[in-house]
Image (tube, rainbow, N blue to C red; front, side):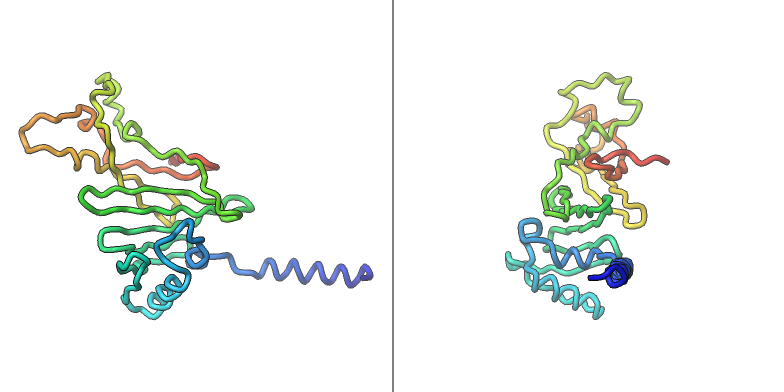
Length: 213
């Protein structure tokens, strides 16, 4: 291949790469390996997308016999009704030359509770991302109380939402709801008196950090 032809070919390939549209959350939803999202087969996901694009609320059968459907879509996120008592969100996060997909799964009863997993789409490896604990919800006033381990419940609960406009993860405390006591009674765990209702985090590298305001 002579120099001119090689130059033209390189230019064509570069132009094609620039013209290729960025992959959206719907693209990643279709291609998620079953090891990441085993609830829905690829064919079922495609059917769900067709129903959503047609403006239909028709549910699709998942592998457990439940009903699933797409609730909301943006370029970088999809909200799903996974089953009667569960929802899921798929969030797409650019990461340099790679892309990260976050899968948020939320059980809605008896106390709502979420789990979050992060995957690198280059090879679909699961990332080791440390999630917030109950101590991350403590207000500044809690420092004065000198709380001990006995002041914290053994289990904590929170729900997670993804804001597609800011790429922020909003963690909402549900622990106090789980350990709620009748009005006028004493609170079993003192730490529950010093919790913020929500905290916000963004993914930076492999860490969830508080966003700068």
